[in-house]
Length: 295
Image 1 (cartoon, rainbow, N blue to C red):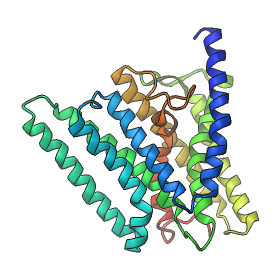
Image 2: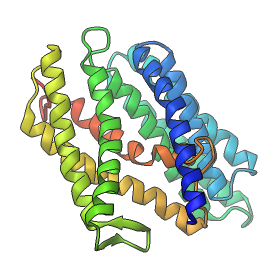
Image 3: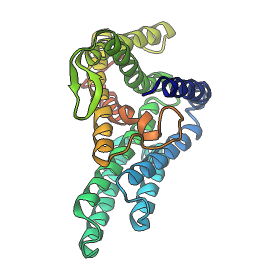
Image 4: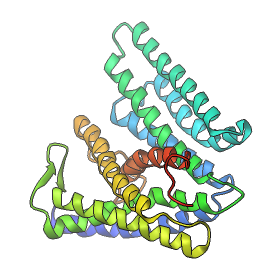
């Protein structure tokens, strides 16, 4: 990339961050209100729209309209459906049922389309839509742990972003400083083994540091070893989340999923790792009797 383009891209990134960070702070401050479901539901719908554009199905309304509505509405309704059902397990059962109905609908379209809708396209659409919806929905469910009784859910919610952004930033700088061996060049030519190792190490340390903050705030007593181990595992998941999104882009020959965040790309470019991390954290934090990060 020419030097002038690098400078322009960096300016766009800084400007986008300057605008985006205050918005993120506001969403965090009001995350126990309708602000969070609305914002995350909107991101889910936009992310799904970007994915449909990538795989060439955006203009097929019988596919794109139900897919975008599924991602946006299910994500938005997740908090209220879970509260109404009183148990997250009931909500997850309903989510699985809705996901099956949506998937079955797409497969039926492939059957009756007389070859105009390839089975592979329908399968990829179903998988990516459920993947996107599950990722964004998990963010809300994670925030709602102990909702109304403590601030623990807010800290758990922050783990999603820490688990995505810290390994990414650390991986970039470690890769620039020490990178010599390509990680998976066919998928992401710039990622190095050294950068990935640095990202994993800093990811574990960042989780332990947040545990210290939670302990000092008196919200809960952290378990530092489980936190550090979870941070390491999450960092690995984060890397694969990024690579999965990169693989789809590379197979369809696009650079970015969208242009919503100048210098950063679209929703899927910014949330690719988060979509992989959030369900994992939601699953382990929903069952503290099996694996608990805090006492």
